[in-house]
Length: 155
Image (tube, rainbow, N blue to C red):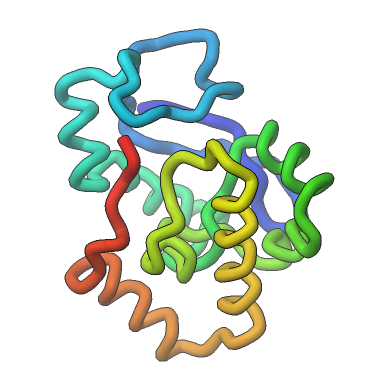
């Protein structure tokens, strides 16, 4: 497993689980995976493309740290950085983070190398929070599993 500290509900830190897809390195808490990142292993490429690397997060759901649907949890470094740059960023932390979310099924996932990409994610996260209902969660789950070409990992 790969374990990383992420920001959860009410800004509390939790250990987010994933299958390890990259070589062990000192940059894992500071540097996001890039397209064609040399740190990604051959098996890791498959796991990331198929999103199988996210499956251990169901353990986080069972432990109460995450929900199936909600805003994605970010690295602590990103939480600090984007809290200062993006209005309403911290509002995302009023709910449990999710394995999948409205921003992700609308194409905003993976690398956040430009500020506008994170601003769009937050915009979709806010729309999700303001309009939450069970049917939307079901739609997001369906889109994640079957219907969204937008839900593809960057790595």
